[in-house]
Length: 301
View 1 (tube, rainbow, N blue to C red):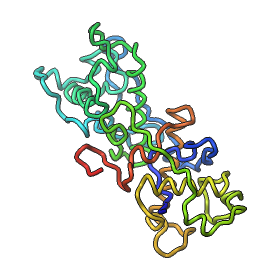
View 2: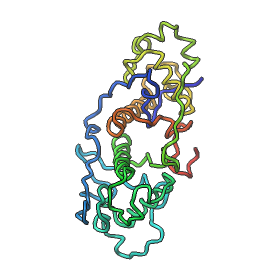
View 3: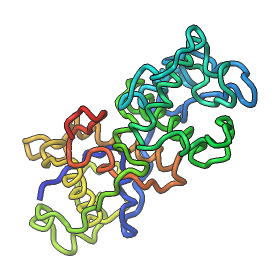
View 4: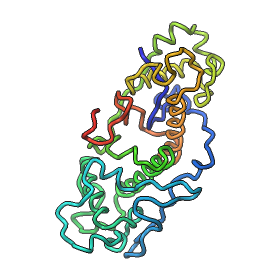
């Protein structure tokens, strides 16, 4: 069995009850700002739009804010369909609609493009989040609408904090046109590579005692570590050298090995900030057996 420690959008250590959560990473100062400072806009009546510009700006700590709506429109359309409202569409969404709390600074046209693109991402229309029959789109009655705001903030934080402000992660990447992202089974068998080099006693030892340069996944035994490595192989469809190189020195620093640690940091702040410490997503939620996950329906996946 092939295996690798690269991880994207996964809480790798929460897939089975036997696996403890990974130790928290040391986060650099420029990444320690936390969730984007996106003030509410247009609450109740029109109000004023969010501070900053529609697609950029900075947040606490000086980090560049990632585009808020491109992760939504990537699978849909950048322009709204069926709207003929002329110059009105160039006004901030917070001045056009009531109770726009996250995307209020966007121009009305782009805001509506994002709303219409939700169907491509989640396979659902307006009634999923809005009281359409009552014609009360401003109401926050539905938990799906409130959760959607959190997911927009989460996507922005991922793209800003882990990808330097570039829009690399999209809504479609996880959802693939379904309201609930598909769940993928996690590896339950220790990979053959570990069985060949480790004794049953080794598998019970702390992983940092068995292997060199283990930084993120300390605190678990070698067997749990091996299961996670096997899971990464399964979810990304790659072999050991994808992260570790071909020299056979597993402790050596390699660019993709460094990146894998950053992905583990990402899963940690996602779990803590948006899922109460235990995230339901796995690396396979995005990757689905591919080293490079598909961002849009047009990408190979």
